Amino acid sequence: MFRILFLALTLTLSSSSFSEDPFFESEFLFDPEKEDHGHVHASCIVECPNSDLRVVWYENGELMPAPYYSERKDKSDDVRIGGACKPAGSDSWETPFVMADTFACSDNNPCMTIDQKGQLWLFYPTLLGVPENTWGSALMHYKISEDYEGPGAPVWKKESTLVPKPTGIPELFEKIRPALIERGASERMLTRIETNLSDPLKIRLGWMSRAHPLVRSDGAILLPLANENFNVPVMAITEDEGETWTYSEPVPYAGIIQPTVVEWEDGSLSAFFRSGDDNPQIPRSNSSDGGMTWSPIERTDLVHPGSGFEAIRLENGHLAVVYNDKAERPRDRLAISISDDRGKTWKWKREIENIPGGRFDYPSVIQARDGSLHVTFSYNLETVKHVHFNEEWVKEVSD
Image (cartoon, rainbow, N blue to C red; front, top):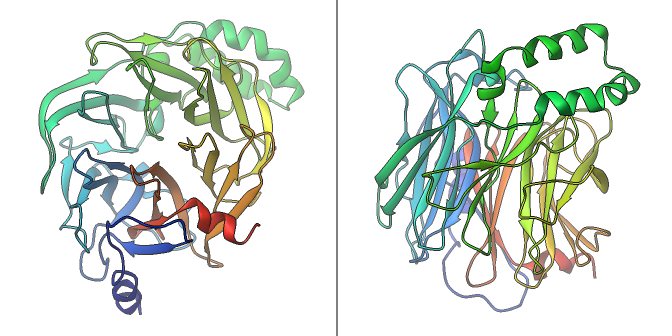
């Protein structure tokens, strides 16, 4: 059944230019009935300068039975970063390859960007304490390549470790302690937070990437991070190709992770967060100083089941968010919503997937040079699905 669906979906996709007529195409990067990559999750897509498409994800953990919510990556130390390339003009993806693999460790949540010099950046955390200590033991790594256009894995010119040293986290928790109690934090939780704050490794480790890094208009790379020991986001920023890093003040809220950041025409930034609290509305914070300080969070009108998503500012200034558009699990629905007023209201929405009992996770979205949108996401944790469409397709059912 899956093979028939796979073949049907891969017949029509091309890299040619498109008119403003609505269109939608989809395909799988690989057929899991032919290529078993185990637990496949957390993809990220980029368009290369030569119009090739590159996608990364993590793979190789043992696949769990439905409903899949006990993540396999928590119990496996052989997880690696996989990748695939679709050459410009090709009708199919090339055979997947390994992008990064730390021996006897679990590599997770990769993300990529291409900087203003045309260099490819890959970021990913390595979980040092699997299986006993998972997300909280994450250590960030990054690689930079000038030689990545063509088949197979990039040739890396630089590989390094990123060990964040942010300030202000103890002060943040002292400030928000009354709010945590008001939100129902137990004494046990507060004690655990205080214990973690006294351990310097809890602040240096546990930082995780997820969404695309932002290439700011001034060329700096802003990497959105969140610490899994405290559920607090911080932005890591480099202006010298990773030689040095500065860190923002923490976003003034606890209980949010996996920030996705957009830059507006005036240079201000907005970040949106995956939330783990009882409010399903997607949180947002704003910055007017390049991401160094952030406003108190506010809630958008978009709801999500506490799952990962991504936001992007389109060339026309519109804001697009690809997310699981429901307040509770399972993650069996995926949609795109578009706003023309910076997210105050959402004028257009269209479903990308809606299959009861399915699972569609961690969407990654880019706008290609031809103006069309590319989205990848994990499909039932067995493969990565790629969908290609334009804004007119989204508006088609809303106008």
